[in-house]
Image 1 (cartoon, one colour):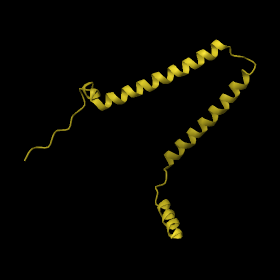
Image 2 (cartoon, rainbow, N blue to C red):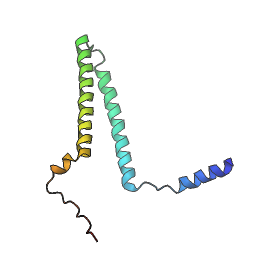
Image 3 (cartoon, one colour):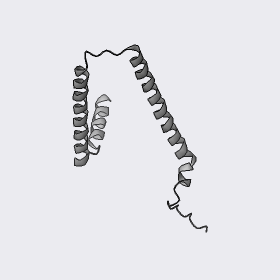
Image 4 (cartoon, rainbow, N blue to C red):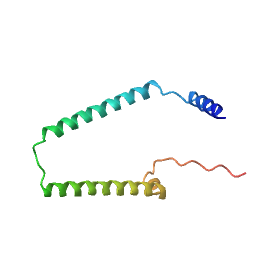
Length: 104
C-alpha cells in the first residue's frame, strides 16, 4: 500500500544519523569559501572585460587545459595501480606487518 511505503520511508529517514557540530562548521566554512571564490571570479572576469584573447592565446589555453587533465588523470591512474600491485608496501620498510595466526 502506498501510505505504508511512505510511512516506512519517513521512519527510515528519521533513523539516519545527524551531522555533528564539527561537520556543520566544516560545511559552513566550505560554502563560505565557495561563495567568496565565486565573487572573486566574477570580479576578476569583469575587470578584464576589454581584453581580447587572440588565436594563439585560445590554442595555448586549450592545450594547457588538455595537458593538465591528461597529466592529472595519468598520475591518479599510476597511483591507483601502484597501490593495487603492492609496490607501495616495499617502499615503507618501517610499517609493521601483522603476524599470521599460529597454526593449530
